[in-house]
Length: 185
Image 1 (cartoon, one colour):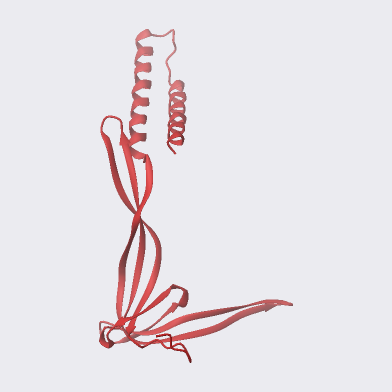
Image 2 (cartoon, rainbow, N blue to C red):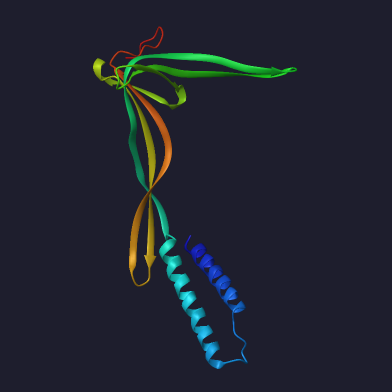
């Protein structure tokens, strides 16, 4: 990865010098103007090198994962629902099955609101009391550590969060989950 960084820096410098060559004074006009031009090319090259080193990380590594509860509601009722949908055209068609959790959640104004969540994004936990049953929307982020380095200044790191997924967690009382005829507890 380091070699790519230096190749990219060399390409930027070549582009900058070639653009400055368009502004170059005529060699016959003045020796002083030409020296000022060469000094400005060197200064612009040094500034580009410093900015490139300060803005582009030397290494990128994963530093873990962070979860954050984006919203929570008290749970009044919960049931599962399945539906089939499809379409046909001439002799071709498709059929799609959808499984979802249908909930009634308590609002702050003492009302109830119906919410539906696809079964693929829901995790159900049997860890709440009857009055503590709730549904939580949880955002997961990956923490990425960006390492930077400057020759004179030294090295430093910066953590950045990248959104990875959103999950719905439903917390129900112990013994609420039944598996049809079978009980796995």
